[in-house]
Length: 242
Image 1 (cartoon, rainbow, N blue to C red):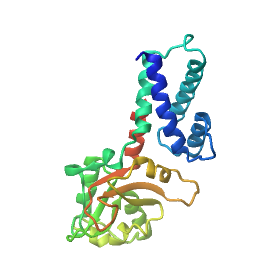
Image 2 (cartoon, rainbow, N blue to C red):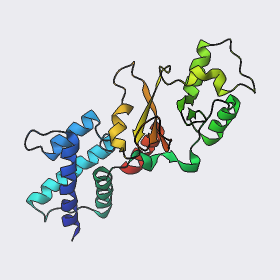
Image 3 (cartoon, rainbow, N blue to C red):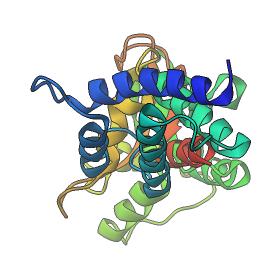
Image 4 (cartoon, rainbow, N blue to C red):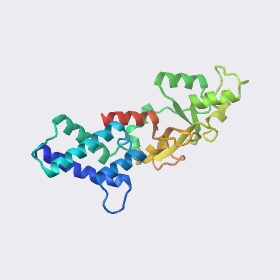
């Protein structure tokens, strides 16, 4: 198979997936229309990227040329390799667990833990959010920089000392009391694309997606298996579009 045939074969597979992602089902839907729909509504983390979107528009132009006269153009090696990479990442999207912090890298806090210890651990490990569980594995909330400072802005008379524990500021970890951050639970089988739209704040009062906690079936009552932050998703997009 030469480069032109390889490109056209992959393009057909990509076109089928693009139309599916777009959700358009009004008879025949062109690649161009489906691509524009996905990009404008940010339905896919990769195609939402302006750079990837423009590249795929160029791929469409090349496909149209080759479909009419395949003797006037040919994809370069660099172009073909990038097209193959983008297509693969769109057709076979990553699951949340693929980009999650998991295993021995997971950091979990408990009510008896000292606040200063957790803060130092977050700083040394560059962690922004730490889920809090009790000894029986019940999810209690999330300790984060934002919730920490939000709590003290409302309780300025409270003093922190070396012996202050998470239990002493338990109200600060209740995710229902957090007005700025959004936390979600998801199954290890969920894909990044399933939750990407939560990253896009459409209203000023919307909370920002800060972390997705992964369990076997997406239930809070199940053991924690991984954590995905907005930074993890943005890093994945950067890696998969370049």
